Length: 329
Image (cartoon, rainbow, N blue to C red; front, side):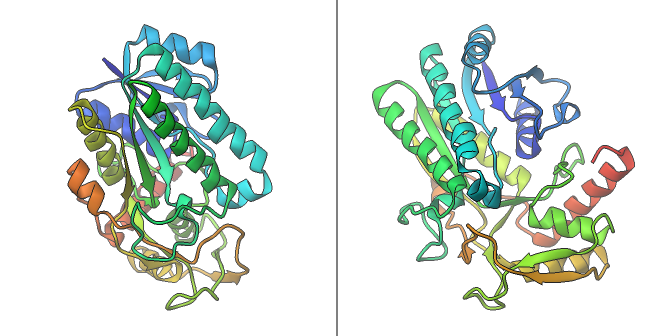
């Protein structure tokens, strides 16, 4: 049996491929390399260059490799970009996901783990936000992901496919063994941007909005370390294989840091006081969103090991220095 990882040459997907291989799984990575890197795919994984919306290619892969489970990461993820290009996001994140799910059902794939997002909650009324919070995404990105959750729910009722949708919060850090990290040069992840500013790869950084209803006026976020996130996927896969029903879970630490607080941690860990510019709010950004994680711990048996922002920042700094030395980031 094989696990297919879509987007496995990207940030989270490459860590997932490592985690699966470490657990003794057989892995096939499908990635079109639009944002991922071929070198980020572990050597022991089978790599296929292609698009997850290519019905013929996906069908052939699922059959040839006897795929039992799909872990689906491939997606566009930049909220402001989704506001400017909604149709692009609905095509890539939603329409192509429909094709992937149909191929899975037709090929008899048993399990599907979906990379969803906290953006499905929009600007939540309560924090920490539970999975039962009213879903009201405020960006095309969030809506494109919620539509896939709805498709999976409906398909699971009508077929033998079982699924887990994991709603990520803000993913950061790198593999503790230094094998992978956030490698996109112009990534918009806050920790990545701040680390690049600390290493003089950027001329400082911007903070978008300091007039939110939060303690210091900047957005409040829950930062989750990437290998802890991948562990939640392994736990979800084990649960589905044991015959459990489909489920939706938040994956975060139930701990919020403001943008300004996170920047201060980067300055502390790096020892560099880089320029920070205050800018206007960006469209689609909620004021505060922090995960309630009781369901993931109870249902998946998830036990995070890297719930420390200073450790996360150090991993990101170490990886960015390595990228610079490799001259590939």
